[in-house]
Image (cartoon, rainbow, N blue to C red; front, top):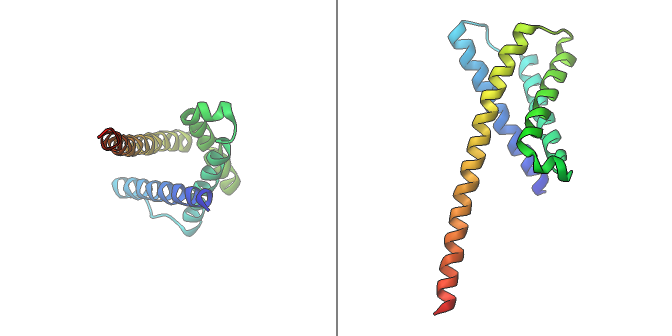
Length: 136
């Protein structure tokens, strides 16, 4: 159940960030809003990226290089799904999506690392306090 929760939380967060980024770009460039098919494509793509990253964690080598591997998995899945849904390739679209995905990925990695560091500090404080209490 924990594994499913991790995949779903990652999917929801990435879906939200990608949708907000698309909405922001749409507002600033006066582009029409996302269609139902675009939203479906984003949801399926986010789910596939989450599943791909999750399964790459089982390999020892891939796990050691998690951030690079997950970035590559994300890019392969995104552009593969785009080709699947749209059936054509555009260099302009590629560079725009590449830049946007890279920014979103960096933000998600920063937030993940920040939260992990914060959790580690809390755990270390608890351990330190327990050691002090045991020494008394």
